[in-house]
Image (cartoon, rainbow, N blue to C red; front, side):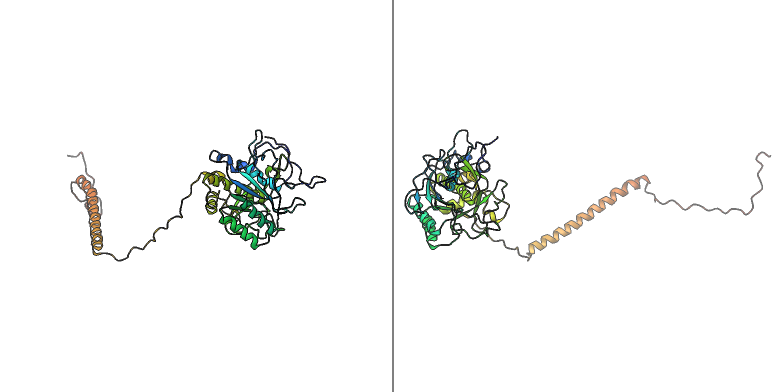
Length: 393
């Protein structure tokens, strides 16, 4: 199926207002949706009743595929006001893979199309910052998301500076039953240096790396022990601010796929604790052959919703003990009898074979020796006798 050309992933600024241009029409089902197959989970749940906070540049609430699903939110950069608009477009892109509704003639839809999006702005409207936020602003945004009733927090922005305030905000969110999913960062190339991303590196935070259509890790996706799971994050088709769609790269959008899957799990399983959601995501992930940079594997929305894992860890098998080398008297007697019986049986078989071969041959020779008698030797005369006259009288 042919597709209308769409914009590249890096947002271009519109003259005069420094905001990203609207997207364009894209009708086919994009590759990431074909890979994850979220529609298979929709007969069970589409995420209704779950609120997902998106920490990024805000979310455009007026986009046709998000209309009615985006709350007012909070601007953590200004520490006041709402975040239901989006100049840079990054937050709308993440919200798109989470909650975009199905629309006729458009193949693209979010993984959890009935969740409510809570936009939290942690990156300023003017001037791009490459998805990197200040740790204090991130901490403020996480606290605001918890206060406003988020069930899942998608931290699509990262910081490379550790912060006690950020640690405290994450710990508070998890203690209050909120699942925290965080991007692993886009500085994984040789020039990027692969620095440690926060809050992905914190305990109990689900760190997300990005893969491309081939299943390989995206070249800029950061790798380390903080990558718990991976999701599509290269040339991903998603919503763009104002209208239409665009193609983007980044672990921020990959984080959206995992956060949406966590929302499906919470909606389906009665709001389980964060550790249970994490266990469900990791236990149902698609195994990847690329080693630890894939974490537990590729997120699998359908399996996360329908598969049931064991309620407890596998039980430990009892230790095996070596059998004793000492033989009992009964065993020794049995062995001796077996050896004697075996010897007798072999001897009997040999006798039967000898008789079976000899009896027919003896009968044929009338029980005479099979060796012929020595021939009689006669002495020959030295001179021949005179000739005999056969017809003389």
